Length: 147
Ligand SMILES: Nc1ncnc2c1ncn2[C@@H]1O[C@H](COP(=O)(O)OP(=O)(O)OP(=O)(O)O)[C@@H](O)[C@H]1O
Ligand SMILES: [Mg+2]
Image (cartoon, rainbow, N blue to C red; front, side, top):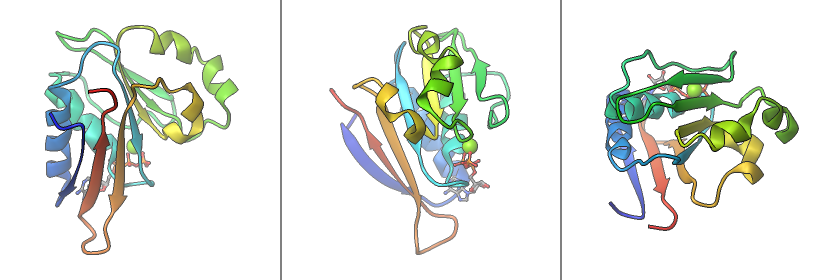
């Protein structure tokens, strides 16, 4: 797999498929930070990653409960955070964030801007932006440090 790369997806299914491709190279303890505006497609990527990991549970945005927990045969703990409503690092630490990070599970984080300093150095960063060309196009950049 390439270290850093960018693609344009033309609809949500292509974004989900990209997530499933990303899933194939994940290993225990990986942290994936998803950057992008409201409605850019962060949850769609998470859906795809979970499909790729063969998660059977329903994947949707955990905005009100902050973290959703899923599992698959290969990964018993998959944590999906949405930190949109979190106001400080202390608030996030107060919900036991470090225990999740040290669980050896897969960690997926929407709105990671709120905890930038708590992210490990080897975090996989995915940036999603709208494009000017088409309402349904997304420019998606994947940064994988250290490989
Ligand atoms: N190419 C595309 N990729 C992903 N989503 C797309 C695309 N084109 C259109 N969409 C639409 O954009 C929306 C993306 O929603 P999604 O919940 O994944 O965003 P989000 O970044 O998680 O938002 P939030 O910050 O509110 O959690 C969906 O309504 C989806 O149908
Ligand atoms: Mg979302």
